[in-house]
Amino acid sequence: VEFILQLGEDNLGSRARAIKFMPLLGTLFVFILFSNLFSLVPGVGTVNIAHDGESIPLLRAFTADLNATLAMAILTIGTIQVVAIRELGIKKHLQHYFTNKPWNPMNMFIGLIEVMGEFIRIMTLSMRLFGVIYAGEVLIHVVGALAGNFGWAATFPIYLLEVFFGVIQAYLFMMLSMVYLGIATHSEDHDEQSHSDVPITQAGEAKV
Image (tube, rainbow, N blue to C red; front, side, top):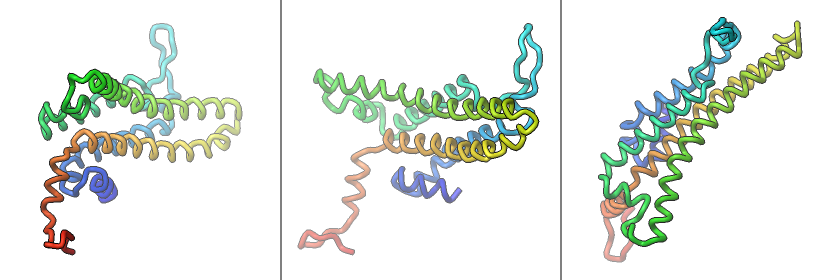
């Protein structure tokens, strides 16, 4: 918890804001980490059942399904947009994309690219997480099948590697969400207010 709060303090500007968004960021990290490690539990992805003439896994890790990671990315980015509108207002939030002169053709073009960037963030968040976890499942299955009776020994190093990747992917998803949240809620008014609180001497130097 302290680790996430420290990251939030560095990226969101204050410890109070880090505490405010801790439920979102902490839930993302713990839930994704649990889902990633769940894919390594024996029986998950390997015990199959017959359904409509096909053999499908009885249990699957949440993050090994693109539909799940895409839904989680949409909810995360959507939550960030809602928080930004609540904190800055719709007008200032739109100025993050189109500045204060949206009628300028260049500003409009750049703004549309920025809006498109939000959709790209959704795709990158979902595809990165899904790709790594799904590729790990496939790698363990292939190596175990090739090793035959010694599959348990051949896949052991890969299991350790997947634990490492599972932690890293949970951290990356949470960290990127935190950075996107900090960018979306950033306001120059807050910076000006923080600078105005610093006492200035007649010589123009800040008091220490």
